[in-house]
Image (cartoon, rainbow, N blue to C red; front, top):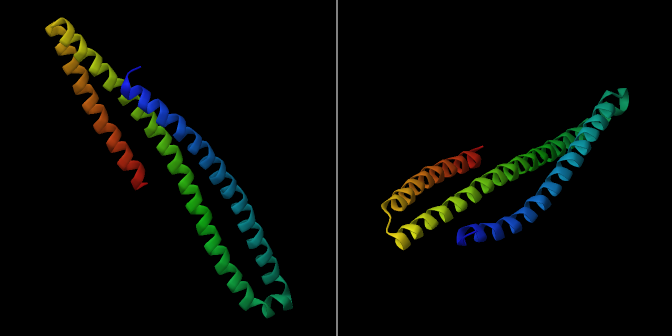
Length: 148
């Protein structure tokens, strides 16, 4: 593995730990947050449907609904963060492939310098062009992931 491959391997190891921790946090917050919001809605529905108590506590239940709306919005934000983590992991895999491609381009260029064989130069150029197109596709995917 060349320089770029080793560099990405180290970054990937660190990012993998961050990804696993982030996924654990976001999935737990999302799961428990949904349970709390649903339980709160159920409690407010029960209070509002109770004949006399519901009428008396209507202002308090309105405030409670507002708080639940904010909590639900927070849970939705955490769910979006969870999806962004998945998109980031997918893009990281593509970047790893780009780094391997960069190492291959460097290797083909090195062969040309060592041997002077034009076929090696053409191979380096072809691999470089493929790498360029791949990197543009990865950049486009990253932009699309950020827009979601």
